[in-house]
Length: 338
Image 1 (cartoon, rainbow, N blue to C red):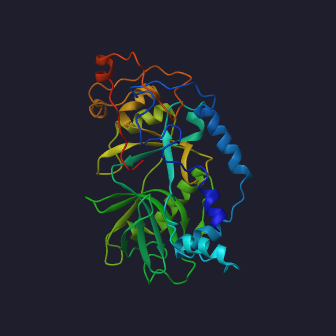
Image 2 (cartoon, helix red, strand yellow):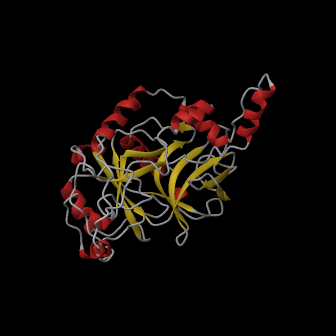
Image 3 (cartoon, one colour):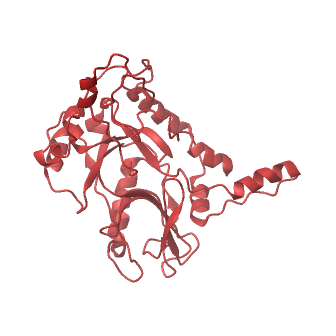
């Protein structure tokens, strides 16, 4: 199981991942790339899609262990392996369990046909696990910040009729409305969907919420409500229309997530999930947005023209960058949600 966890997280990286949303968008950065990279975002997308076809992991067992916090291994035969076992007992298996986005730098050639968009509200990104009659929320780094009852399968004693009833969700928590907005589903009612494509996961999640409407209402057994975020096809005319409409939630919009229809739920940063602030859409995707959205653009934020070296994770300061040019460019830091 240790090997499985490592395989699932092979793509995870905090400081070295390409186009990490923990930094500014590459075309907003003050500094140009140190060197051109041959691995452009589009090429990495194709590589990821090809690689996921070759992986055959035991997701059912992995989801069960995550839900039940059961990471026991066989007893080692010698004292040297005892140290390794002791280290495993202190390992946080709930860390790095979420699929993270990259800045959308290169608009995919199949963008309108093969991609889906989700509006992402402002809030805290959480892994939510419902199992054994209780529900727990974990940060991206794996710390449990909340335990409560819910009407999710496995989330309270009345709904947890069997030990196989457990649910694992990727959510954004809004403290003001006391709502978990569901971005994605990894397991529902003991049925893991890590290795299912995005289009199916999104459709299945909507169906399950419609079948279990009690999770969307506050009650004694469900003190915090859950809402599945809607998704939209990325045809430009459709995106322009939905961006002009009211948001599907009351809280403030954080940004837009773009999912490839065929990507599996993989842990860590992936080029198959893109991220943009809404005011970036006209520049990156060439779609007009309402003035109310453009009003959120930071003063002085200015994009550089796209180049072959935009897809990079390391930058170096240009020695002859002018002082006034530096002041005109904003460093846009993305919040923990991404």
